[in-house]
Structures are given as structure tokens and as C-alpha cells.
Image (cartoon, rainbow, N blue to C red; front, side, top):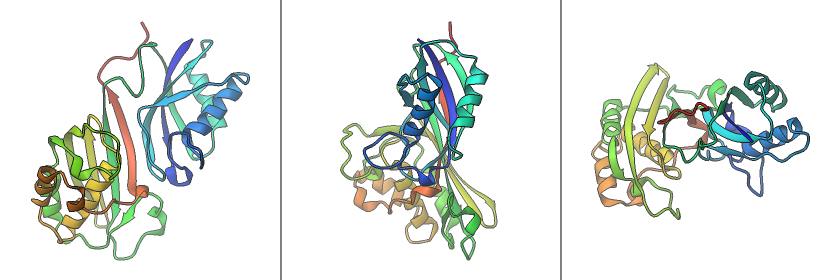
Length: 253
């Protein structure tokens, strides 16, 4: 078996998330269907670096899969790309060592959340950006974002009902950038994120940016480990998985 790593992008609007589930269309299901066609009906399972929820987009999701025979990586990429639906693109395919695992190899992820701050919503960005017309406390929002950086127990930003017990994660960088008069982008980089953690942090930062809470609310939430103190979960459509970087070299030996 030959293992391949692929970097893919997708518009998450019409997907019920990345991972196959009982109900709804998923990215994994669509790609496995194409790989089966390219493998003469043999079932091929793909593994992703992590799940993205329903409606969440990706520019740099990483997957891996095994094929019984070696294929030219660029020809394989082209075949996958042209036979996948139009809301999925295959950006690259590389042969890797069978020791590589897209989920379990140590890696670093970057997510971006897009906000539209114009007085009226922009119909051209409605699928990829959340409309928040007033961010009067922008500097306070930046200060709050800085308080998220570091190694913390992020229980206060975790979706209720999660079964994961260990909730300590390291966030290496958070930036709040005003791209232009009508657009703000919040970026998060770290070694892993809990279920809906990024969207819960965004919802809290929006509260701070709207002038409803001070920046120190972030510290209070982390210290109290209480989800009820944090803001609402920001909508999925503003979130995008931008990049996954692996610590170890994944080139074949």
C-alpha cells in the first residue's frame, strides 16, 4: 500500500461537516466516492487532520489515504480534483511515509474567522463572513484576544456536553486585524482546539468588541472554567481552517 497526503479546500456551506455521518452530505463521503471510482470499485478510506463542523470552510485541510498501487501524485491530484464536486478542490497530493497520519502526527492549526462590519450586510460575502455592524470597542477586542494566548484549560470555551475530559490546549497566536473599513479577520493558531472552541472564543470577542464586556472577561472565563460566562457560539459560516503544519517531515524514506 502506498500512502498519500493531500491538501484540500472546500466551501462548507452545503456540507454537514467533514466526517461521514448518518444524515447529510459530507466532504469525506464525496472524496471516498471519487477514490473508489479511481480504484476500480475498491473502498478507500480517508483520514482528516480533524473534523470541521457543518458550514465550516477549509483552505488547507489535510487528509491521507492508502492506495494499493503507486500513482503519479500530480495525475492523481488532477483526477481527484476534476472528478470531485465543484465545492471541493484538491490543491496538492504527495506520496508520504506510511508512518504519517494526518490526525495523530503532531501538528499546528490555524483558523480564521471573517467578520463583515459594514452598516448593511454584503450579499457577496454572506456564505463566508458573519455580519456584525458595530465593533465600537475594537482596541478592547484586540486586548481580549491577546489574553487567549498561552497554555490554558479552555473548559469555559468548550461546547457543553463534550466528552473530552482533558481541556488544556496551547494557543500560540491570536490576531485581530481590520483588513479594510468593512472587514475584520480574527486568526487563531495552536496545537489543537476543542469542539466549537474557536467559535465560542469569537462569540466572546464580538461581545467585547461591541462594548458589552471588558477585555478582562477572557481571564475571568478561563479562571472560572465556566461556559456560561462566555459569549454565544459564532455562526459556522464565518470560520475557515486555513493551514495545518506538521512538526515532522512526511517525505517517504
